[in-house]
Image 1 (cartoon, one colour):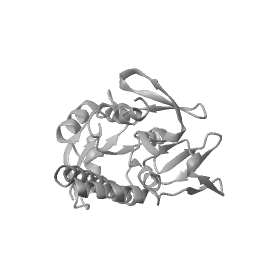
Image 2 (image 1 turned 60 degrees about the horizontal axis):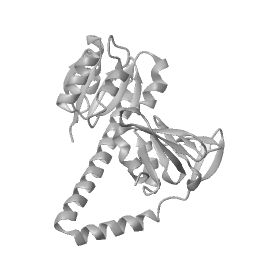
Image 3 (image 1 turned 180 degrees about the vertical axis):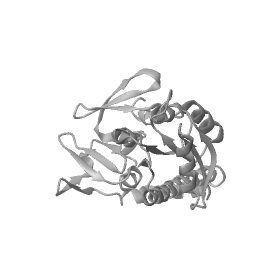
Image 4 (image 1 turned 45 degrees about the vertical axis):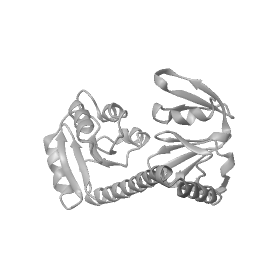
Length: 265
């Protein structure tokens, strides 16, 4: 599979250096380079790349503005590349695949490309499964019902306890007590109402371990236990907040507002 890639940096030398470092990866195809945020947004919307290497500090629209500017489409994967360490936390909050410091280390770049391959393979598998179910529901409804039955059986295999190593200790967390989970790069913040723990795991991997009938993504970086939702509060621009049993409020982005439909019949 070819990874269609756009490079964004206001420094030409930085783009050229990254191009050279990416040459050994035969599956990475650079389809465009951009030197500012406006160019990047146009290119991403037009070319629909799989991956964007994105500088953060640029004149005008910075890297985070670029990410925000393409959220109405199915966004690509982002890798932030910058000389400024202080942007690391915001990069992880933006759910970037990785955060690379300039000058880019070749080993870290190789690790990043491998992460991208895994993310794209997972996305493709999910899309293909959904297409199959959609086709089956039209041409072979009996088979579709059988698949649904398999899904119900699989739900019984989701984990009831999660072991979390945090601050040198191992905590056994009952899944039913988890209120919500927030992503920060390859780390998950697990909230149980009266406690919070840090788990080193990707959002994608953790989602696979949780029952999708109860745990739903409501934002690119947030999963909520639907059993813990007490109230829905409408917000502006089609967004809303879910009020949880502890009183905590979690924003639901427009992309996930179908989740809210479960509570407003």
